[in-house]
Length: 240
Image 1: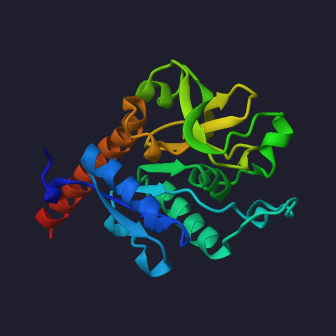
Image 2: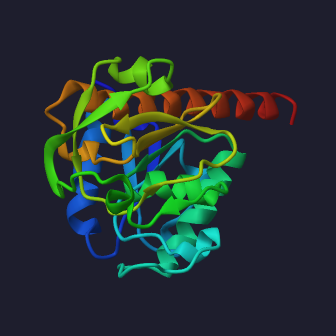
């Protein structure tokens, strides 16, 4: 068992509406994987310098103004959270902090880094919209992806609560998985450090070892980042 003082710290963004029930799930997944979670729900909560990894969580749709489009359909938006998370993603990207995006979080990663979204993805792809936390959707994993190294290459059964989906990819990002209609279901950074965005909600699928492996991969990357920071501080101290 990892001691609490040794656990890397993961900052987790959550919705002001649903964070009270989602954060405990993510926190438990991270604890099981060996990390400690801190909740970022307001701007005053956020301290990127104090964490070893980031999770951008699920929630409301992302405003299309962030990628130069107009609202094309009814949606629940949270402009304040959009601004906070865009800044967090850009900062984590620049500082090479390991990052995981969940549902909205995967979309925000793509948007913050310069990509776009399809606001009505199910209509665009003619796909079945399951809207359930149960694992009913089939996802095909790209065999050459980082995701495949984490979960294996066999198809995944996942849940689905989203309306929007990744459209044009941001620079430095590639598709890691798609569903049977061709809709993007996971994205990842082309090169290190760790960055993965999944369109589903693995925090609800903790009983599935391949879903737990996603959190474990983030925590392993965060631990490596934590150790790297310790080494830098030790060198700085030695030459102070």
